[in-house]
Amino acid sequence: MATDILNALPVHRMNLIQVDSVQRWMDDLLLMTECECMCILQSKPISVDDDSQTDLMFSSQDSTQNSLEMLLRRAWIISTELTKIVQKLEKNRWRRVHSMSIRTNCHVRSMITEYNMFSRTSTDQMQEYETLLMEKCSELAEITERCTQTSDEDVLMAMKVSMNEVLTAVGQSFSQLINLALIEEVKGLVEELDTCENVYSMNTAIHSLFSLTQEGARLCHLVAQEGAVVALFKICRQDRFKCLYPSALRTLASVCSVEEGIHQLEKVDGILCLTEILTDETQTEATKAEVAAVIAQITSPHLTFTQHLSTFLENMEEIITALLKLCDEASNGEVCLLASAALANITFFDTIACEMLLQMNAVKVLLSACSDKQRVNSSYARDQIVTILANLSILDQSAEEILQENGVVALISMLTEKTLTGSAAEVSACERVLQKSAVTLARLCRDPDIAQSAIKHDCIPRLIALCRHPEERFSSDAVLVACLAALRRLAIAFPEGIDDSDLQQLVKPRLVDSFLLCSNMEESFV
Image (cartoon, rainbow, N blue to C red):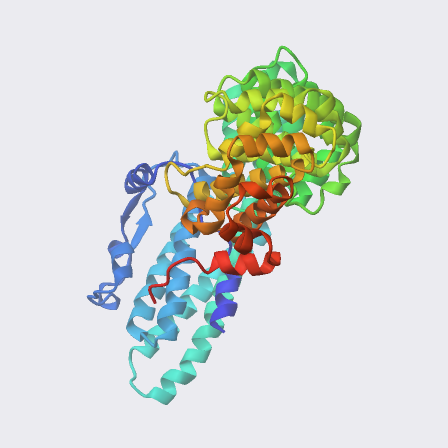
């Protein structure tokens, strides 16, 4: 039953506004007040529970508060409160359940009052759910109060069933109400983009849509469904709104993380619009970088619905040319990262792309970028570059170009990738760089000249170190497999360059046996 209740709650576990957490807290303080003044004092016992310190709600003193932001913040607070009630109810904490139910009732009524005060529209259906939600919240407060007036376990257990049913109804009606309100808000924002001529107001509307898309796939789908993609591309087709292109494109990249967004993009011939902006010499680097971000999103290998992008193939050569140029001329690491990420995804999207890249001297451009710390300044960027090289290495003709541009040295240097911050995301990026560089070397070393170059630049000792020392590869099994494969490829060309013990343990056994040997080298302190 508790699972049903939690599933009924809306998915608004917010990133809400992408700012520093301390700044977010300071902003919230301006809009919050203690909930005590709106609760019946007798129903709120002194408690040492952690959640007693979070009994906060918004005040309505700021009449200029954006209705969408207010709605999302309120929704988060109410969702949190309902989740806590479920948890306390499971533990039979009757008094806490009662006081929290009253507090939730206050939050709900304040949300409805404030939203109706600030919002542009409130439909009949929304008003029905508002009434239903308030009725169910009152019912929840009443039934939980009765629980505090008895100590009979049988009676309490019977009432618990009723409470679960009411809580489920509260969660469902709350979720429906928030969904309807969000639909109306998005419709209003899209209408503003369609009809408004004021650049400042349009930018504010775009920012609001972008904030919504940061809350997850469900809201991205809603934004796409209500016509935002059409409205945003309409802006991107008008020269007088060039200053809005970057923010509009950034929002499009987020919306196109869901299937509905990509369908809408195809309907409005969005690929052609993106191609025109990307190949327009008068556009700023920042605008082109945002186009690259959209392309990287819609060609992501993690999406299962990119097969619908039929128009992409028609414009692929122009797009690849422009992206490669953007990568070559990038003034900073972020631009190069976005351009290379788009190129990397395109190499997965269609094999013809790899042939095009080779014809356009992509190897030279990419390896030149790798040696430029201003353009490639992070593990994330190197991950994209080595992804492209790994996919190019499938083609036999890539070996000569990589050798000619000193690519073997670059790949071996990537086998020493280290994390700077130690964050989980960066460690994961480092693992990918290690794995893909080893895979690329394994593929390229089919060519004897490449193999000799790798041996000359001490590739074998580094691969052995990665196999034998788990800390060197961040204890990654994927990196281990790739390094064993590369080592075995090099051993064919130069077996005398490997010590006998390494040969017996890492090369001659079955791959799975060598893998098990190396993966068990980590010390156990259990």
